[in-house]
Length: 381
Length: 138
Image 1 (cartoon, rainbow over the protein chains, first blue to last red):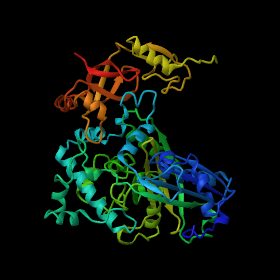
Image 2: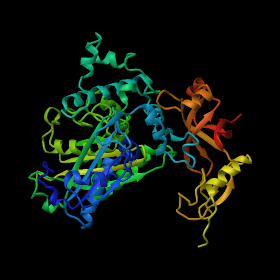
Image 3: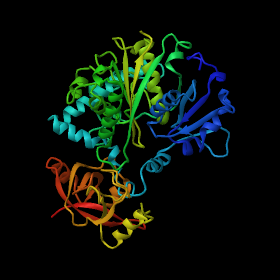
Image 4: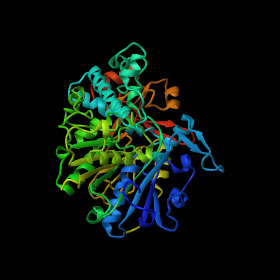
């Protein structure tokens, strides 16, 4: 609210998003339990939960509600306690560390009980499947795919370390030096083993507690609050149940098609691309499906460093889910925050090297919501 | 429109007890929903009808071995690692994700370069219900 120059009395409606409210926060309707904390007593609100896509849907919900004309000032926020769980019947400040024993059974709650979970069909989440097809289609060896994913991890890690909000505090160069290695040696060493056919441990999400929010208002009044507002042009949205083959690819293509038709813009018009990448190569798939990078060329872009924050096609300039960190439901709005900072030229050490007129955000959640939003820089008109 | 209160999910599992693998066919467009759902996801028609797909040709693509991250620990132990994830397509239906049983990691790697491969249903007894998985066709 302070960033936006808005006070609680001006907020007319708020959304509260969380991916795992029942078991992480121990709340069924967390929008109610947080209201008094920021002056929202008696104000209208609702909770929503779309797994790791929650924060991206939060932007869509806020923009759609304002566009409907029902409210002028909407706060849309998400909070996730991904590593510290609430303790039932204890005050809110008392937390316990979450464990894999907590996480694994709860992961099953995002998959349908009709056929998907009983048939072990949730390999929808498995990036190995589409990477296998990608490698075959573009004649890439397993070693080349490894080189691409190591370059991706190294670049994103550097961005995360430079970001004051980033969860990673040491670059791979710094960690490797402690073992008398180079970063490239370290990333391919037993310190960073394969956890699947293609993905090493460096390519998986880094969990944190976190929160983020945005104020959404009509474009015509935004300049009352900021001399550099960011306009939400719209959101494409596709959902595919977990047993659907190649769901991330198909849903991303569908969401991108919607936003492209709505705005008349393509991925090639974008100056910055952010993708939810709790499995890191997800950013490569998204960048090609959304035409930010020509199909079949993203692997080469990564090897050439073109997707780093200082490259000509920057992706995940905050470091992404595997290095900046992942607070499940809140991560989408953390990406919105990063996009806004970059578009205003306030991103500090990781500021991209060219002006940003348009940013595309590709949301993706384990619950299989996939979104594609475009933000426009309204401060340069 | 006549309302259909048939419990399709329950019937699917009851058919498996009889050794039958059943889908639902759309009378309007002929699309098969497998696993079975009430409405047609291809043309949007609300009505579908039972169809026996036990012996309908089926193929698998996208064969991926289970791994530390992508794998079911109970399944890993039960099949001693000899299963893989795969995308299955019953003729006339959409592709969906499932598993191929009794396939070694080496076979998975070799066959992943020779897809599509023919598969047949394998009905497995689970804890309190039967479920359909897949095996390589002879």
